[in-house]
Length: 162
Image (cartoon, rainbow, N blue to C red; front, side):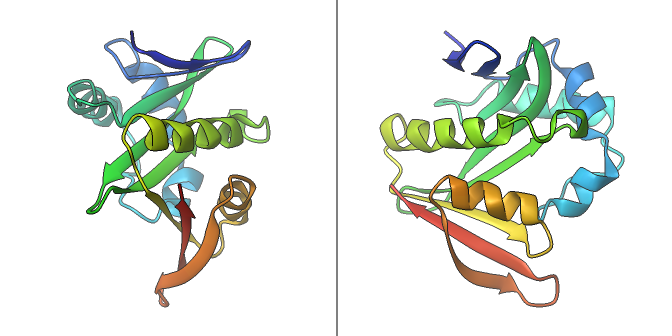
């Protein structure tokens, strides 16, 4: 089963063939690329989306998911394994879907997934100091701001002990 979470309007599942066009459409946004502290290509092309789907469908256990809102793939949420059962979390939502609570609901779900399915003990989120929406998201999901990783780019770190 690849549906890990679902509600009336929201589904979170592993990416699969056929998701590429929607991932590329929603991910190809300079506003998203500028706010992602990790490398997020701009432009984000169909080929980039194909590579993402191809790489992420092979994960066992799954740590990368597409976010589907009202039957449309609108973003992605990923966990990257560090050491000692800690994971970095990253999330993006296509701009037309901002301010609908999608990121908050998705982030809360992945925290529970990480704790129960991956046996994670800590989640770490990096975001730019200027990304007030991401900072609010992580605070709503019980993350605590703990540090700045790069003073030059004003990247701040949030942690959530599970």
